[in-house]
Length: 123
Length: 165
Image (tube, rainbow over all chains, first blue to last red; front, side, top):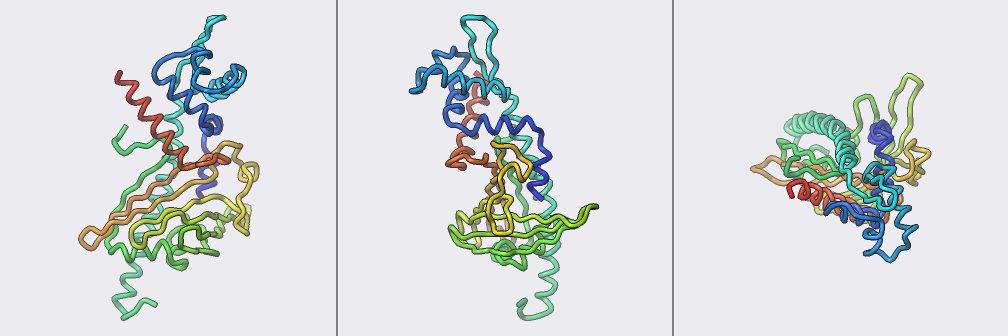
């Protein structure tokens, strides 16, 4: 049932995961933790053209992971960590599924133990 | 955030009143695994359970819905097998042959973690077993998927550190 539960997740997470599934974009986010930066500053550590960096920034912006400033010439990027916390909530959907399984595992274990005390071998 | 909090995984701990050897069997022997794994109202059948590193797993799940029985298959591969101690495997929705389903078929757009990794750690505590389960989401089509999980953890730690500064 995991797949079904996961399918119920907020659509927004699809974009967050897609945005995070790229090492350049993660590196950009890691850089922005230190503070806002311009596109030029972000491009420096990577051997990528400015248009390529801009493309990554658009993906991050669409996923809500960064915010771009509004000044025409200098549009600094800032990190918005909120979607990362949503990722955390996504994972939490698995908790009730496993709690439920563990309850059944516990019950099954007791059944087995009863069976085993009744016979020398359980199989 | 708690100490154990990781951004993309869920960690659950439970103590079972049986030694690790018994718990290990519940995870690695088909008839035992099928007996407890499925959600209530579903029947689970283990088709393949080749418990060794690189070995495959395939489960069939049938869930009754108002529209009739819904058939699902879950497949994966065992990544770490340390008897009575540690079991790591991947899990994804599949067809009846264990081939992964495209994100469109599972109703999940590209980029969604359609593959997940399950880690089971068992520790003997005076005859009982402490089980620590970690379930990690892995984005579809991402190479080095587990590396991704670690990278995200690091990023979250950085974010947390940045808050204090």
